[in-house]
Image 1: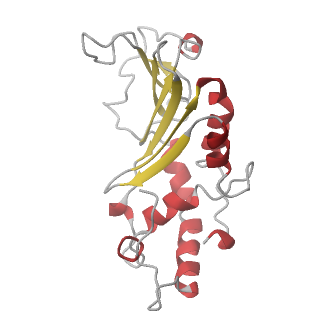
Image 2 (image 1 turned 30 degrees about the vertical axis):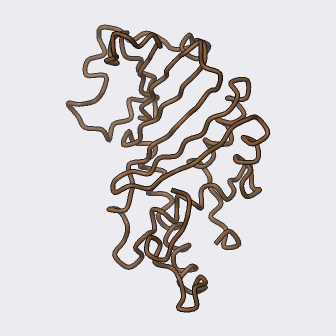
Length: 218
C-alpha cells in the first residue's frame, strides 16, 4: 500500500529514477488540489473510525434529541456539515449478537462521520480515516496522483515537519501505520499502546489539515 511503482504512479524517467520535471508537475497538481481535498474532508464524504480501549471517549458524547431528524443526512446527501455535533442514538450501529464491544456513531460539526468502538479487553488502540478520493479521481494527465498524495501526507505537516514523524512516534510505543489507495477511497490507519492515543491522533490529524507537500519530499 505504501510502495510506489512506475505502473501505479506513472512518474518514472526512462532510466528508472524520477523525472524531476514530471515530479514537479505532480507536486504542483497536489498543491493546487489541496484545497479541494480539504473541502472533501470538511464535507461529510469522509468516514472515520476510532477503536478505544475502555469508554473514556464514549463518555464525552452528547445524546441526540428526538427533534434531530435524519441525523445521517440521507435525505440531503453526504455533502452536509450540520454545524454542530450530532450523536446518533444507541443501537444505530448494527452488530453481531456475539459482539460485546460498545459503539457510538456521530457526525462532527464539519460533517466528519465518526464511529467509536470501545473494547475494554483490547491491549492496543487504533484509528483509521477514509478519504473518499481514489484512483478514479486522478486527472488524466497525471495518473497515480491520489496514490502519490497518500505518500506525501506521511512526509511532514505544519506542526510536525519532520518526515516520518508519526511512524517514529508509533515505533516508540509499540505501534505501526499504513495506508492504501483504492478506486474511490484512500484509507489511512495506525495502532499503538492505548496510553499514547491522544498524541498519536494529534500527529495523524495534521495529515488532513496542513500537510507540507515539500519539493524535497518528492
